[in-house]
Length: 239
Image (cartoon, rainbow, N blue to C red; front, side, top):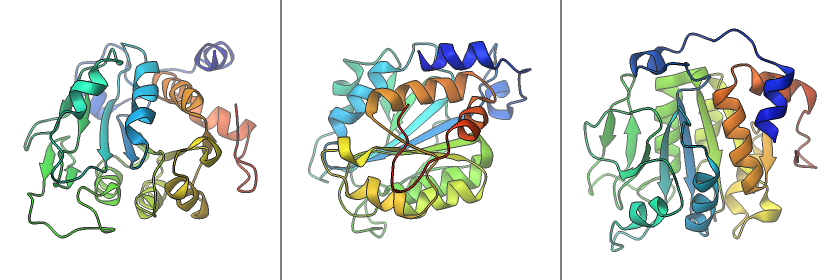
């Protein structure tokens, strides 16, 4: 409903999209990359959000979900059961493809460079925010590589991982969405993100999926909705 409403009200000329164009998209995406960070309760949150995205969602999605280093890499199999988008575990030197979802492997930091190439740290890299992989590591690389063509999303989780990363994304002109902490199993990460003052929208999981669809698939939608409904830190915006 959100996507349809925005499309009716605002259908601007297509924007040039460097990575989208290089990936051969018929209709360039308004954003090239969506970076998502999650921790406690994140698996179910990811299942909900990814399961609601359309099969023709054109942006690449990169995800850090905090997992034990002893945990086997079965998460992509679990998420593939509810999503129409292909979901894989990230491998070193692989290049982002539109409409694909990449998960950071357990015990390795995930970065993305300017060419859309995935970089893994290896299991001996220092922990960041007491964890490896860390959301901040991924988000910082996405901000540097994609600037205003990136969206950062913080889902349920404890502690503060991702708060610094969303500041980097915002500083480079990207957009920031956060799960409404009132709907999160663990509200720590959403609250930490909101405390930065960098969040554009705080939404429930279904609304997050609808917002991502609109922002990525309708050039200008993010600017239109932001101007219509500014976020007040004391009252997270709900569509």
